[in-house]
Amino acid sequence: MTLGSRRRVALVLHGFSGGGMERSMLRLAEAFLGRGLAVDLVVGQAKGELLDAVPADARIVELSKRPVFRARGHGLAADPRAFSLLLRPKSMMGMLKPLVRRLPSLVAYLRESRPDAILAAEPRYNVIAVWGRQLSGLDSRVVISERIQVSRHAGFGGPWGEPSLHDLLRRAYLSADAIVAVSDGVADDLAAHAGIPRERITTVYNPVVGPDLFAKAQERPDHPWFAPGAPPVILAAGRLDPQKDFSTLIRAFAQIRQRRPARLVILGAANPTNLPHAEELRALPGALGIGVDVALPGFVDNPFAFMAQASVFVLSSLYEGLPGVLIQALACGCPVVSTDCPSGPAEVLDHGRFGPLVPVGDVAALARAIEQVLDHPPSAESLRGRADLFSVQRAADSYLELLFPAWSLSKTAFDQIPRSSRHFPYVPHNHENPR
Image (cartoon, rainbow, N blue to C red):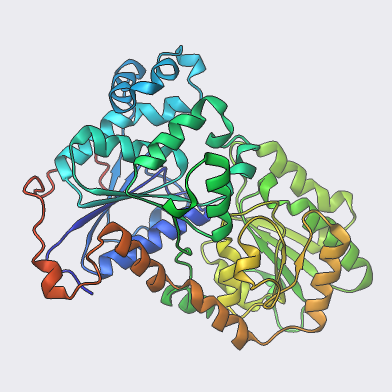
């Protein structure tokens, strides 16, 4: 349905880096604009590889950092039970500091812009979205989303891995109007790890497949290895981070290369917080004697052109939430192989029906599965049909039902629901970052 009046949705996230979460939020922004909503992208930093992909009609609002002493006051007002955490010395606030320093700016934005609904992603921004709604006095609904296995991510420095933050995060999550997980596996893990009742968590698959994907898949990949008659290309994509376990993929490719001609392309930028790992990955092919057949070209604007021409796409991750790249490869008709990591791949591939699932970290099993698919690829039509389950429109409808519970009413009935008298047109303020 298209709204008769311009209700406003604020999407709250850290920025526009080239990850799956950011891509999903931008696809939702575009879908919401198409339904007649006004959209604000409220970010900690208005930068990243996907900045140019922000829909033209969406407004970017960058949250400025405020002094720690002022931010602490806002945090204490939002959650007095966090008193001991918020009064730690600056050097000890750890993950809490970047969260609370942007809270006053978020409150100012909410008071001025009065969005009708708020959707946040990533634990720290989930928290300040809940706190900001409380401190601003809005009656807007807040929907927060969890996009990865929190128990696994905690071991790699994620917010849920900080014991002192656990109760704070849980209280904030339970104060949201709705909690979304991007897969049943993420939902189950969040409930178990965070102590949140499972019935409070709704699974909504990520918005992955849309018309833009199919259009971009028709382009030719900007790489010489995809020329007609060239050896088959094994493709992977993702940030060069330990979570993606590309080292296992490279070692599996080395085994494949001993038996047949092939090439490996891994798309993705280095994780700026772990540059040594990226350097180790780049050096590994040479150390294994396969450097001439492995390419790591970094971030590319159109990975779908690569997926449409690759012989097989491989996900080698240690853990995921709902791996968008796996779904994108299916939508491009590319055969896939994945680790059976928690969580998402088994749900995406229907427990192996649409592509082999292999144990995490098993080099030999990964190599065998890739060769199996190279020798006996499934039909592209069946793969594209499976990807339809993860369409942008399906996800947008689900989120809109959570953001606006009356969304499924007829247009006339929905338009007759009064908006809060406190909602008024947007007035620019000093922390907006105009494009």
